[in-house]
Length: 194
Image: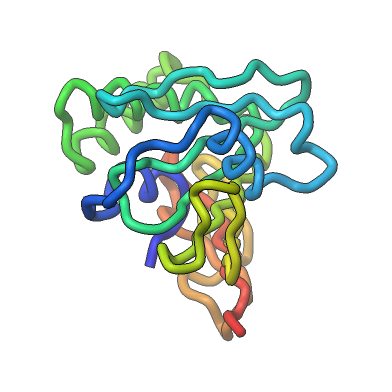
């Protein structure tokens, strides 16, 4: 199961997809599926080029940034987040491009955050991640069925003690804190699946 964006972009296993990347218009249409409906039209959208590098597909007019699907991975996986998290995300992209593994990326961003070099959101910052299985995605029309969305609220340096959140969900769909006490501390909200 895929989790929040950085795991989505760094940790998830890569499976070859039997198709090429969809058109720019379809990439945009699918990327905004993870955004709140009232923020879709003004969202900034990034996609990936043939080398796997992130490229700007559309400059937005609001605070929402969306990432299109990685065409090398099976199924649909898109996400949208608050613009205040963009420096954190972009630094992860740079480190991954340098060949750093997940642990090295975590340590580098942790050190840079502590030193003040890497700016983090200074208040809660939302990220939504939407997924769908390959069989439920129409790459020609940009439509997806049976999607599942989870949310993450980044709260750097927060702990279970500072928030009152448990370290694992008390029941399906209830929030919990992941990576407590680190630059990547966040509230996980995984709605129960139908």
